[in-house]
Image (cartoon, rainbow, N blue to C red):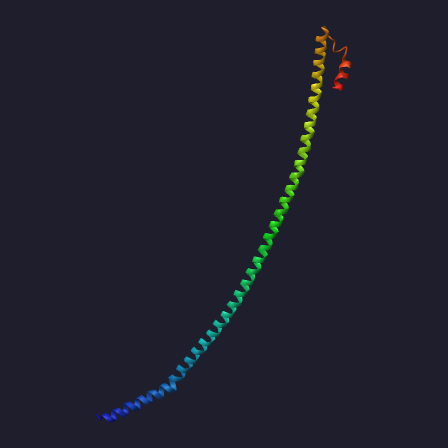
Length: 156
């Protein structure tokens, strides 16, 4: 075996294999690499598009949150105003009711004072009759002198 001939045959076989790979396998490998590159480029562009959409969505969400907070503040302000109105109305109603109760109490006091005066007048008249009876040392008939006693009660 001649080492040079073996080397030449191995070289020819190597080149034949390389030529076959270049003709038959290389286009498939290049097509797969290019397909993979296209898929990666497409994925990157979709990822960039998704990032932009996410940023837009975040901006819309922030805007909606800001609007919701402003609306919530308006609702809270309205609630405070309504609460203040309810408190003012309740205060006014309480003042009106207190005035009514005060008037009723004043009328009741006046009626009781009038009743007490009438009772006092009756007792004074009875005491006057009793005093006059003792002074005169005789009994005075209250029924007979009713007009005189009534006149005395009205003067007192």
